[in-house]
Structure formats: structure tokens, C-alpha cells
Amino acid sequence: MTQMPLAGRLSPDPSDLAGLGPVAANLTGHALVEQAILRGEGILGPGGAFLCTTGAFTGRSPRDKFVVRSAEAEDGLWRDNNAPMAPAAFAALRADMLAHLAGTPVFAQDLHAGADPAHRLAVRVIAEYAWHALFIRHLLRVPGAADLAAFVPDWTIVNSPTFRADPARHGCRSTTVIAIDFDSRCVLIGGTAYAGETKKAVFTVMNHVLPGRGVLPMHCSANHAPGDPSDAAVFFGLSGTGKTTLSAAPDRVLIGDDEHGWSDAGLFNIEGGCYAKTIHLDPASEPAIHATTRRFATVVENMVHDPVTREIDFDDASLTANTRCAYPLEAIPNASATGLAGVPRHVVMLTCDAFGVLPPIARLTPAQATVHFLSGFTAKVAGTERGVTEPQPTFSACFGAPFLTRRPEVYGQMLADRIAATGAACWLVNTGWTGGAHGTGRRMPIAATRALLRAALGGDLAAVEYRTDPNFGFAVPLAVPGVDPALLDPRGTWADPAAYDRQARELVGMFIANFAQYLPHVGAEVRAAAFV
Image (cartoon, rainbow, N blue to C red):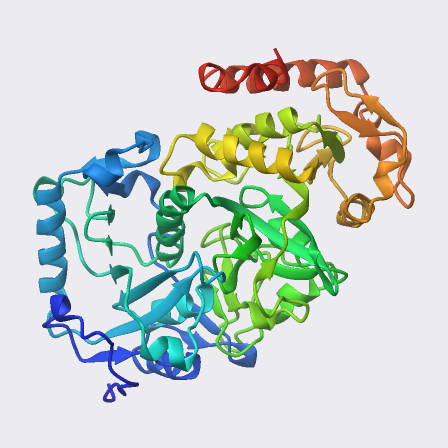
């Protein structure tokens, strides 16, 4: 192995991380690719993309995430997805992880989370793997020279995939651990090579910090009209619903694809890059994203490729269906240079309804928008997970339950307040199935979805006639220029309308059962809109 180049010192000197080293500080993307190749962490693919695998962990490990007990963390902390860890256990974990890394070459990156200087956090990431440093350099925001010279970290993240936690000593569940301590402002990640853990740890922190500043953190993509940052839209959605694809529309300017804040001043991207799903990625329908997989330094995770040509097989899910690529926003031709926009005029909630019940677009009242935001519905399809043989509902509060630190109603009320203050139009868009459930029907045509969104964001749906959906109560347009009218009435697309009615009643029942947990915590208007 060649000597690691030092690209400047960390300032201030991280005396609490003494013993680590050598430290390669703030290497550029090119240098990180070089180091990752020299260290055998992956290989170069066509165009210079970095091809790698993450071993046993090809996705997040939510049951291994912990938040240390502290006065700050306990104040309003939602423990559903944030298991407690004792301060003494975290201290032992930290000492043991640093001892494990003693004398080990590490890669440090000083980065910002948040495009708005008024609300950003300075994050120092200490990574055992060079490609993990490359990944997070893509995903967060790289400071300019002046900001870097004056950089003082608000938070530190230490990531060691080769470390193995001891549940008895460290107060965790397994040899894998993600531990967040709001007192020391430190995150420890061990026992997993899945790079997304670092990204989502940052978002979890922002989900706690930003509401205290009066800013709504959102698991969403966002874009704005060309030349008009005041004409902005946000797109909420779980993985696989189309956040990245639909927000990267060629006729809009992409602000970001996954994590944003909504302040009184407007929108800002928390990140500086994209982490796009690549399974079945189609160059015809998603040319900009597809092109990044042949771009130098793009991180391509867990994608099967030809051993000789290294050409990627986009349809091979033998390693995982959660194949990904990570790249900086600048790789997208129509991306925003600032990551900033005004307050959104449109709030879009994306769902992939594998039951084939929901229409391709519906207009929501503010109360209905709050209901669907708290519900966070999508559906798993058969074959995506072991044991899943038919569509299964997924309800993830605020379209990002694993990353919330406060009760969902806190974020729901913040969204409701902003919709009320701005008059933003609210939409539910189904990117799932029509003509029947998964296995019988077909996937909603992406061209139709894009046409519907263009009409909604362009104001064309303000003047059309609507019907009231008998199952969910929202408004569905009767006709939209450029879209087959038959598509707008999902019941009419089923060969057996009675079967549709049965499926619709079943889905409404799922919504009602899930929303029961929120009824004691929401106002009368929201309760009245909650399918009951």
C-alpha cells in the first residue's frame, strides 16, 4: 500500500481523536478514488465510476440505532425508532472504537449539512474506508476554502465497518451499532459497510436540531421553475416512490433529491448530492441519473457487473434490490447551484400503491395533506422481500419514520402551519399500479405521471373539473390535457369493478387502523379528514 497523502490538517486539531492515523484530511474526490483503488476497496467501472459492494449489509440496520440518554435527547424524544443507550455504554463504545482504530489510516472530511448558512451544521466525518469518505463528500456540502480554514465541527461522526460491538458491554443489540449522543454531539457507526448509515445519521440529527430553530426538516426532494426559485415544489415519498426520478425533471431545476429544510425564508437542501436507486434504471426515462453511473468518482453500490467489461447489469438484483449510486448534485445538468429556493407553492406526496386503488393524482385539502403526511403510505410488492407474496402496506410517519427524533405530530403540525401560512397547493400522486393490484395490473406510466405533475405545478389543474373520491374523500380531476382520462378513474381500469371496491374498502381499513395512533394528538379538522 502506498503512503497516504495528507491534504491539509484538520482545524481545530481533533485532540480527542489522538492515536488515529495517519489522517488523510479533506482529500478531493479524485484522491479518494485513488486511495480506495489502492486499498482494494473496489474497482473502476466504465467512465471511472467506483464499483463496490457493502458485504452482509446492503441497507440500513434500523434495529441497531440508539440514542444516548441525556437531558436534551429525552426532551420530547420519540423512542419508537430511537432505542436508548446509557451514557456509560456510549463512553465505553467510543473508547473501544477509537482503540480499534488506533494507528489505522483514516479519512477525514469536514463538510456542511445545510445549504442555508443560517441553519447548517458543520460535520466532521472520520471514515475507516476511503470510499465512505468519498460517498459522504458527495452527499453533504463541501465548504469553500475560507469556510474550511475556519471550520469548527458541530458534530463528529466516526465510522468503522471492521469494528464489532459487544452488546453486553456497549448496551446495544448486536455487533452492529449506530449510536447518537446529543450531549457530546458525536455519532458512532460500527459493524456495517453500508454507506447510507452516515447519511441518515446526519438527517436524524437535523430532524432533532431544526425544529428547535423553527425549521421543518423533510424527507423529500425539491425543485423549482427555471429562473424562478420562488416557484418551488417539494416531493415527499418513501424509497422507490419516485422522489429522485420525478424531481429531476428536465423542465425544472433540481434543488435536491432527499433531505430539505423549510424555514420562514424558504427551502434549503440539507445535502449536496444524490443517492439514487439504480435497480431497473432506464436510460430512456431517466437519462440524467443513468449517465451518472458512467461518471468518474460516482459511487456505485452492490450492482452486478460483467467481470471483463465491467458493464453494469441494471436488472440484476442478486446482491440486493437496494442498488444505489451516489454523486454530487453538479452531475445533474439542471441542478441548482445554491441549493436554495423560496417557500414551496406545491406540496406533493408520492405513494407507490401496489394495491391498484389510488388515482394517479388527487388534490388534498390542508387537513387531508396532514393526514397523508402522518400516514406516509406506500406498499411493498411481491418478491421484494423474503416472504412477501402479495402487496403489503407500509406506513412510515412523515415519509421518514426511521429518522424522526420527535413525535410525528410535531412535524405534522409544522407542515400544517406552513401550508396555512403560504397557501401551498397539496397533491397526492400514485406512482404504483393501475388496472389491478401488483401481479394483475400494470405500473403507472411514468410519462403520464410527469404530465400530471407538469399540469399541477404549472397551474393547469386549477381550472379543471373534479370528482370526490368515495373512498378517501379527496378531489380527483376528471380530465387532464395529454393524459388518458380512463387512467384518472382507477375503478374503471379494473376488469372487475366489484373486486376494486373490495380492495378499496380493505385499503381504507388499513389507513384507519394505522391512523388510530395519531387521533389523540391531532386537532378536530385533521380527525375529520382521517377516513373516519
